[in-house]
Image 1 (tube, rainbow, N blue to C red):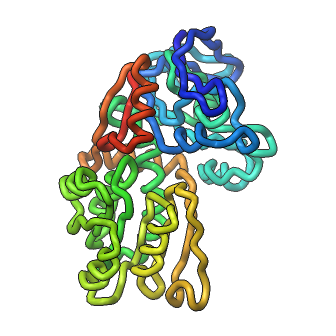
Image 2: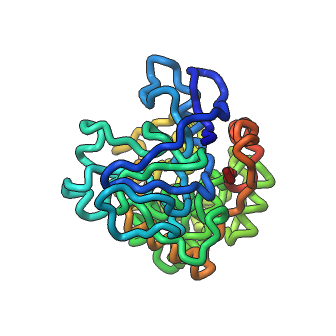
Image 3: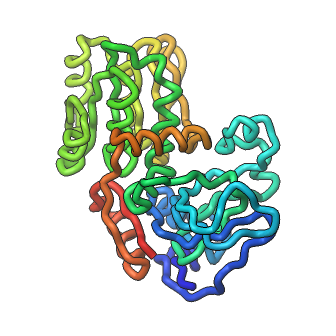
Length: 344
């Protein structure tokens, strides 16, 4: 089969021919129908050799959807021909967090060598994908896999962050979304669907600000030195009850710190390398700073239900597997509008 692999530190990924995998006991093989690209992949491929821990060669793709193609011994709960999405943050399945479906916070995954597809285990940028357990598959129903595959990360990750701040997003509240690219434009839609908050979107790219307005942002502002004053003005100097930073760089975290309200939330979702000091004389009284990771299995089901009900739509650009290296180049350059999806 064909697969897109990261094979050498610092080199671009390559499309290669490898053996088609066979499912072992308890495993499921999917014929991949769609695989999403993510900035996490670019981050991974930018790491120097001394920091890279994901193994080589690595088949990329932690956002995956497919049709069940073959079952390993003992598998129940899914059938050949089922159209499914893959829940990516695999855990041990036995600890307290996993028992709640919170495998994104599994206590044992690192020690046991359990890694997500595309982030240590072979990923979805291939003709076929082995999924370690049927519990990591969620039925897609009538959803188009190409349009919905990105929801497994670009939908689930913002949903998880927003869900933990919903108590702050009452009528009359304000939410700020910093960075309205692949995850941020989905976050705007989720906020509009599940909360009564006024949504303010920030970005430096006019195209992305236009997209934010298209998908429901009440205000779309350029993320520059004037943004803090504008947000303060829009909130009668109260500030934002929740700030979701999908960039995570030092300048955007400074904006988050400057605009969050007393007792508000800052959710640092982006992996831009910034660090935000918190405490007295840094953040307002009662403000919470959190770095959430991915989301839970039950939250993925809820995200897909939002899509089924028409409240959520990912704007995608599609690429063939042969064109996937070019898609990653465009992702790195910031010229993808919404999310990039590879169709093997």
